[in-house]
Length: 220
Image (tube, rainbow, N blue to C red):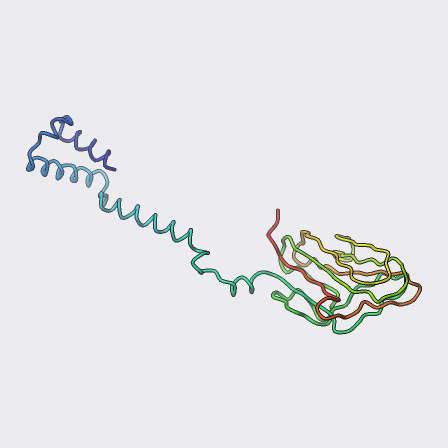
C-alpha cells in the first residue's frame, strides 16, 4: 500500500524521489492532499486507514478460526450427542445350540447416542448415517470340551466382515473390525460351537456378552 501511494504521489506531482525529499513541510502536506484526492477519485472509500483496518479484521478472523476448537467453542457435550455410538449387553446367559449358527441377542444398552440399537430386533446394531465404523463383539464361553468356538460379525445377514475361530474348552473370544456402512446397514454378532451339547455364552459383569459400534469418519 505504501509503495502504491508513493508511486501515485510521484505520478501526480511529476517529481523525482530526490525532489520529494527536498520538499518543504507545507509542500509535503499539499502533496499528501493531492495523493488522497487522486485515491478517492480512483477508488471511492479507499484509504490507508481503512486498508489497515481490513488487514487487522482479517487477521483477527483467522486467529479466531484457528482457536475455534481449542477455545472451547466445541465441547464434549456437543460431540457426545452427535457421534453415532452404541454399546449393548445382555442381562443373562444365552444358550447356544450345538452345531447351529446363532445370532447373539442383547436386551440392555450401556449407551446409545443415535438409536443404533432397536429393542424389537435386539441382535442388530444399525448405522444411522453412512461412514466408517468400529465394531467389536466380546463373549465368555461356558467351559466344556476342547472344541471349535467361533465369533463373527456379519453385515445385513449376507456379508461376513470379521471372524475369529478357536479350538479351546471355553473362555473369552473377541472380534473387532473397521468397516464402511451405508445408512440403514445393520451388523449382528454370531457364534458357533460344536460340543455335542448346548453351551452358554455367559453373562459376566462388563466382559460378556458385549457388542459395540462407533462412527469414526465419513469415509471415501
